[in-house]
Image 1 (cartoon, rainbow, N blue to C red):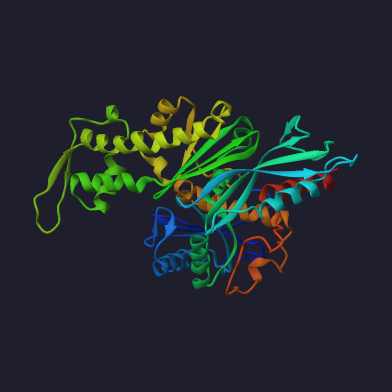
Image 2: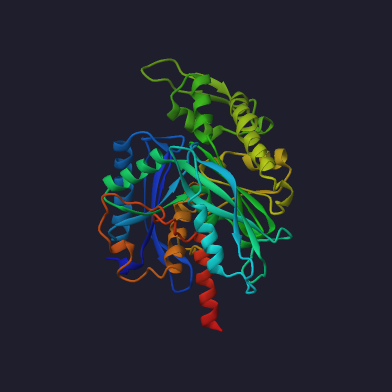
Length: 438
């Protein structure tokens, strides 16, 4: 039976990962939750450590993934919200001033918006581009620190922002892949921001929480304090390095090593079964080999504890927000499925830890396959797209999903630097809704 949906209201999230390319199609239902009406997944063979290496292979993966989602939903995919990660992503702190001497009126949202938009003009190293600007705090008259300056009185406002930059060449590769696939890129979003939207509750964000998305090629960190994102970092290590270690030490293929990791692996040596011998078949009639499950755990633990979690710990300490993470740590992404990684993180970081399932704001009827940490980014990108277009009132037939592909799509700000930040868009959208209710 053919699904009956209004294509104009369909939003698409596209996650171009190191191990998989995932596409999800959905919309907000009458109950305010997000329904998934189609999804697709393909192997990612053109991406390494979160960065696109082979255009043709990546385009093939995108085409297969989007085609599967399109067939399942009976919807034509014309535009997507896509994520970006990789070790080329850099973050830095930037202060920008707003002088309003003589003004006796409260600070307006337009002034704060203008202040942020001007930050997009900040100078960055050659070959890099500003992907996003995240407000961290505002200092009014060098006396009062606030997250919400609108409505206050003051002659000088100093906004502290986190600049997220990436290589222009990598951003151009994402655009090229979208263009070659015949789809419009509505926006390019930092992946941990998307994952946070799918996994974190508003209460966790207010209390202070660190989200770590452990993917195949990278581990992405984002920290929320007082409801706001205040710190992000991309670590160039993910689950694939563990698989590679197993393959190298045991002299087996990475496909077999991945299966060993999933079926028998643990990152806590004491949790392994030292008496359990694992038989590994060899190709071409070679004699099978056996390894001890305890030995496998040692290989995994060396990388996970010695490097991945240690790097996470270092970044949390460097953020300056370690003592404000009262909601603890949330692990998501495919790498969070590794047995006992939650317990190891909780022990090493000395903070409450849980596994993040992408179910925040989604209908209970979404496919079981998607209710997994590995799909946090894809579902978060979908949610980002839905809330962004709601905030901009772009759900009419003339929205982006009806536009024809631009041969040179550019989701970046206009030349004058004008751009609405996502969180400001949603803030204004919710404000309008409350005004209508009252």
